[in-house]
Image 1 (cartoon, rainbow, N blue to C red):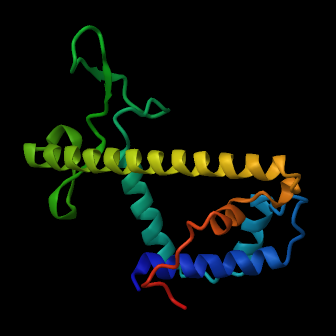
Image 2 (image 1 turned 90 degrees about the horizontal axis):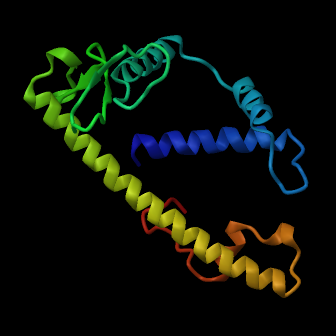
Length: 178
């Protein structure tokens, strides 16, 4: 089991323990702030690990996003595409390069810019795959819930979980814990 899976399982256990102490709304949902409070109550904090996570979050923030026009972004722009299509440029943004190395943007070599482009391409592919998956989910759910509502089924019972079970698309992963 990889670290992400272990982290998800721990988070899931904390979520379940927190929601067991709360009263759900009519539709079965919980207020996220209330859940976060209950989850936080159960946490024991490793201060050094928290410091390292914050440092990594700071580094990620400093890496930024070329299209971020929020506060703190320098007023520099690049005319990369002509025709007045300017893009924001932060020369002090950190760029992640090969071998998990970071460098200030204005000092980045071609190797760093190529790594950055490769990551952007992978992110674009992942985003397109996710969008297609979410569109298909909505398509299936809309068809199923429409048919169920027309048959007079209680709208509160028209959930995504019931949909995937009833239309037969739910499969257990072969590598999932029993």
